[in-house]
Amino acid sequence: MKKKQIHNETAEKSAGELRGWFNKVISLFPALRVRNYQLYFSGQLISLTGTWLQTVAQGWLVLKLTNSAFLVGLVAAVSTTPSLFFSLFGGVIVDRFPKRKILFFTQSASMVLALALGTLTVLKIISVTEIAALAFLLGMVNAIDAPARQAFVIEMVGREALASAIALNSGIFNAARVIGPGVAGVLISLVGTGGTFIINGISYIAVITALIFIRVKEERPEGLHLRTLTAIKEGLWYSFSQPVIRTLLLFTAVTSIFGWSYISMLPVITQNIFHADAALLGHLYSSSGLGAVVAMILVSAFSGKIRSAWFILGGNAVFALSLILFTFTTNIAIALTLLFFSGLGLLSQFSMMNTTIQRLASDRVRGRVMAIYVLMFVGLSPLGNLEVGFFTERYGPEFAIRLGAITVFIFGILIYLNRKRIRKAHERYLSLSRETATFRS
Image 1 (cartoon, rainbow, N blue to C red):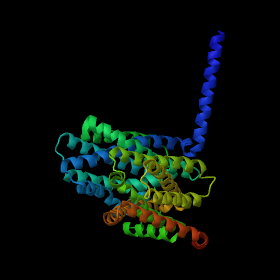
Image 2: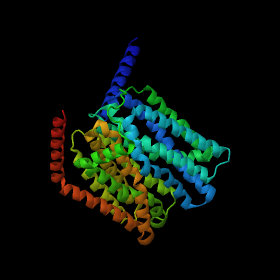
Image 3: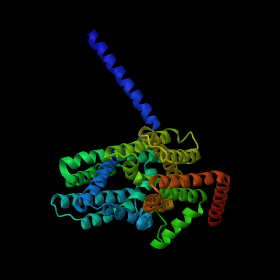
Image 4: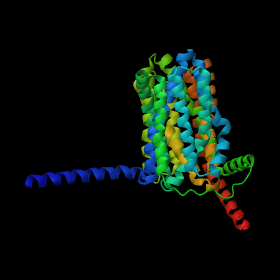
């Protein structure tokens, strides 16, 4: 009896310690205290890992069918082009309809497209034309899905836990980026590219199930009965007349074009500078992704204690300086360390810019504002790939990446030097907005 009592006390003590450890972890991530976000988080982690399976398998399939690096890049570009041309229209849709229902539709459509691609591949009736067509359709879906996902976050967690939720979203994406390619390599060898596409299609069930159980107030927005082009113009005018949002959107565009594009040159760096194979390339990607995951923890834990400007401008400086130093090293260990810090700085910057934009945006136009953010972040990335590819061809990858990093760093310095002017312009904007609202009432 005494032994049993001691055993029970030990078990209770262990359970208490486990609960205490769990509570400490949750305290770092306020968004995870919200039931809706817990469901969303787990569904997204599974689904985004599946998305990386498709990204890797799609490139591999195109290469096997054509043996053309150009066509691999072309199909990848086709999948992102709709974000450049249609995300603004997607933003109007997001402002007009309940976001949870929009996401249910877009995630279901993505699942159908993945299963269609998998089925055609398994049946061996697939060609580059069909792959490109399905990639374009998926890009069209993403043009609506991306702003909807961005705008839906605040409905789930509110403004207090917004920074934590956005940091966690970024962390999920980068955790999937670390896990997905490795899993894809194993699955392609086990079940082929077709089977990998089908597994990705099945992975959407996780996020669709989460959306079914998420409970938010679904009120159709009032007052948005404008024509589509007029609604887009209103979203653009609102975004670029608000000084802080305008500055952050331009900063997002500059970083997307000149900063984020270094990722596309890592295969060239691996082969021509380090004279290594795909194994090292995977380590380079993973190192950057691991830094981004650490940034997720820092932003989520300290966003309420440290001013957002420090995350944005400090993250920019860490990213740019790490990347500049990376272009001068031929030591693999140093290169991995520097890419870790570049990922940490880049995600700290982007997470807090996203959070600040969402906090400042009016609920009435949030979908359109986030569509413009997606346009700057994703839609302009092909321009960055063209820019870095152009300079790499002529001057080498080190010069191309260094030039982009210096550009991003200088833009950050300009914002720092003009921060007081931006703050005063924002205060004037708020004052005028209040006066206009009082006059109309």
